[in-house]
Image 1 (cartoon, rainbow, N blue to C red):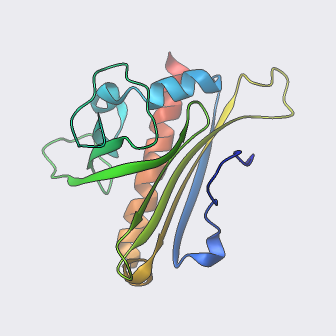
Image 2: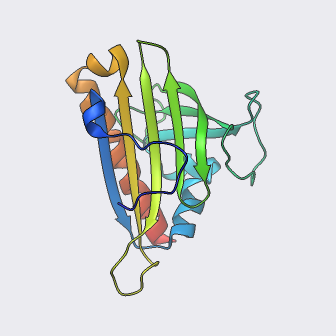
Length: 180
């Protein structure tokens, strides 16, 4: 993975009790992958993990379609853990504040609830280097680092379901981007 030029420290696996990192290489340019990833209204069509995603302003009001994603915005998420396209299944609902965004490169949110929970979620997009047609393929890396009491006490089944959900989202993103 290439390292993004950023004003934040990337999570280091050895510093987190729970650390998941999954990547996928997509046969599409980074701009296209970013565009599909940030087309939140289309998520119900293809994303088995983030079933709904709404971009909100800092006051938690929905932003209009086409608003560029930026640090300070929030994501209202309805998640399926484990992943499924079956919308009769209940969702895990959350609102996350984006701490760092660089269009086409990365999207990050962090959570801190004192000793109970520390979390960093990173979605990183990079051109695949060293192949013919460099810039035609994109590596997407998703990191979920969880600390605090929640990170230390996460049940193995929940960790497996979260890992499966991230992998399913990556696979679905790959399928959607490569079909377009």
